[in-house]
Image (tube, rainbow, N blue to C red; front, side, top):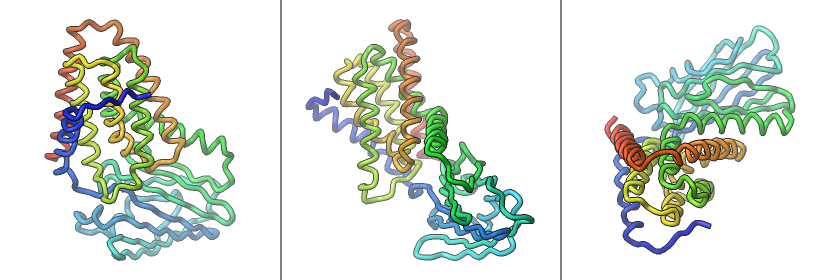
Amino acid sequence: MCGCGDNGVRWRSIFKLLTIAAPAWAHVVSMSSGELRIDGPLADYELRMPMVEIAHMANPETILNYIHFDGGHRRFAKCAEEDGTYVCKAAYEFENLVPERLGVECTYFAVTVPNHVHWLHAVRGANSDQEVFDGAFPRSELRFRPPSRIETLAREFGLGFVRAAMNWIGLLFLLGLAMAAPRAVAPIACFLIGEAGAILIGPRIPWPLAPRFLEAAMALTVAYLAVEILMVADAKHLSWIVAVLGLFHGLSIAGFPAPYMVGARVLQIAVFVVLGLGALRVSTVWRRGIAWGLLMAGLGGFAWQVLR
């Protein structure tokens, strides 16, 4: 269990630390959806994206230039705003019948925000598939055959594993946690519980959370953890602290399928174990030096998100 004791001063400190990230609220959660319907050599594609994501574009209709279907030629396109959503409908033609495996490249993140995510659902006859595209995975393959459950789980697990490995803020947090309590299991367990709690809390938040806000808040969690290391906090105290901080890390991926999250958790546990073993051999002087480095990295990451 997470040793979450009463400490009003600490809770107020965390609240103040995280709420000052409010100026970074510049975008709603950066996500769009698309549907591709294939009929022989023809296909219809519909994109739905929040207007706020493309408000800065001089020619928003060019957004369709950032998605490509292998072998497909766009012969018609029409875009318009519908109740705050930018809707584009396009028709594609292929030289031959669309194969069972269709390569797709989507780089919407290049003209929206770097962490934009596009969910694409595709249908061909009785078969369908869906893929997720972002800066980490701009290209993928749609498979128009019923995938086995093992294939689906393995693919989504692998994407979650790689996504966690590319999350530098999350890795810095794990480094700080290993430096703070390398021998303790409770803090990392509470951190993972806090992340999982975001799955339940995220859909109930009444206002949209900006990606920059979440990234700024996560950077501040690294800075706060560094302060705890410098204050030589004990494992019991850290347990409830990181459970709260874990919520902000979990909100960044709360909308992804369960296998994604499982893959990310496996990577996090493996990284913590490795870092924890290494931390056992680190002297107090080096531990404090690493804490100062984490503090500067966390504050620098926060400043970057606010000022950029």
